[in-house]
Length: 560
Image 1: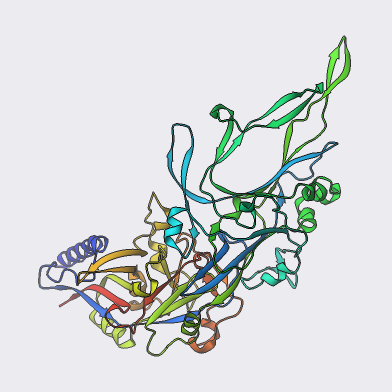
Image 2: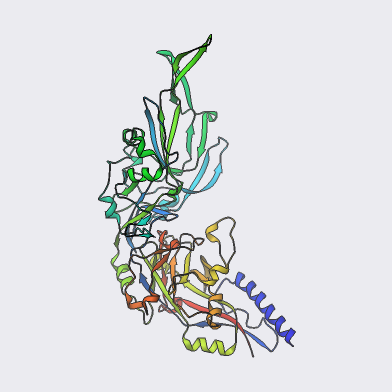
C-alpha cells in the first residue's frame, strides 16, 4: 500500500507539471484525471487582495540599463530622463606629439537591436529594440519623435564612497537632477551643425559604416603626406560595419584644450583624471512629446581622432636625413565602462494616476492596479486568510500548482504596448521568491523570457469569446513553504520589469508612508533593479474589480 501511495503521488506531481506547461485558460483542470479512491485533484480560488503603492525616489547609480529621453503618457504623465556618467581614459598617462590637429571627436552609444537581414551589398538591416514612445504606430515605422539633446561636461563630483561614511557606497537617486544641472562645466559639446545630433535628435536604425582613411601625397610638397577621409561607394573601401548607435560629434576645440593639451599630471591615472574631468551630463530639454531610449552606456565611448607630427627619416650612405612629415590618423579613447553613473528623472504625473497611487484602498483592495517602472508605482499583494491556511494544513494537501493571474485593463490601456513582463517578490523582506530561484528554464532566442515557468510573461487568452491579456505568476514553492511553516505569509510586491535575469535591488531614498506597513522591520526599503530600469507601465484589474479581478488559484491533491 505504501508503494501504491508513493506511485500515485509521483504520478500526480509529474502529470501536474505537464498540465502547468500546457494550461492555456482558467478552467478548473482535471477533476477526473487521477483515478482511484485515495486522492482528489482539486483547483480552488483563494483569497487575494491587491492595492496600489507609490514608489518614492529610487537609487539609480550604476544601473545596467539607463533611460534617456521623454515619455509623455496620458495615463501616467510625463517623464524627462537625463543621465550622468564618469569617463575614463582607455590608455592612462598618454603622450601626444607636436602640432596636434583634431580631426573629429565622436561619442558612440550602441542601441539594442535585432538583425533583420544582410543584403548582397553587405549592408545590414536592423530593427531597434528598447526605444519607447506613446505612439506605437510611429515606433513600429521607426518614425520616432525628436528630442532636444544636449551633452555637457559634468561639474558635480561623483563619488564611489559616501563622504560622510567611507565604509558605505555613495548612492544617487532619481530626483537629484538639480545637483547636476546646476553644476554644468562647459557649453553644449554636441554642437554639430546637423540638427539630428542635438536639437532634433532621433534614434537611427541604420548600420554605422567606417570607411578607410587613405594616405596621399600633398601636391604642393611631395615629401609630405596628408590623410583624407573618403566615402566611396565601393564596398572594398569599407573598413568596418558597426551596429546602430547614437553617434554625436563633439566640440573639437574643447577636447583639444581640455584633454590633448591638459597638463600631464591631470592624465597620470584614471583616479586623478576623474577628479579633473568629472564626466559627461546628458540633458534632454523638456517638451510635450519625444522618445525614450533604454541604453547600455557601459558599452559607449568617446574617441578623439587626431594627427600629430611624425618625422620620417631616410638613410642614405649611412646618413639619416629627414625627408618628410607623415601624419597618420591616431585615436585616443575615453570609455564609460566601470564608471559611476546616475539616471535622473523629472516627472509630471497625471492627476488620476497620482490620486490612485497616493490613496490606495488597503482594506478592500483597489479596482485598478497601476504598475509603472522607475520612480513610479507598484502593487501590494496579500494572499490567504489564516482560516484558509489552517484548513489546507489540516487536510495535509500536496500542492501541485499555485498561481496568481492578473488581467490587463485593455480599455484603459487603449492599445498601448504593454510591458512584456511583470515580476513578483517578497516585499516585506525585500528579496526574491523561492519559485524564482528554483526556476532555471531558459529561452535561447530571448533571454528576457528566461524563467518562463515562474512566469509573469504577457499572454493572450480566449475566455468566453473575449480575448484577454493575462500575466500569470506561479508561486507553488512559496505556498508550500507557508503550509510547512518554513516562512510567514508575507506580502508580495508586483512590478513591471525590464529584465527578469537581474535579481539585484536598489534602495529607496525614503520609505513610503507607514500606513501599509506593520513595523520598521517590514518597511519597503528597496526595489528590484529590473523595475527601476523599465520605462513602461500598465494598468491591471485589481482584487475589487468583478469578473476580471486578480485570481489566486491552487491545484492540489489530498487524501480522501
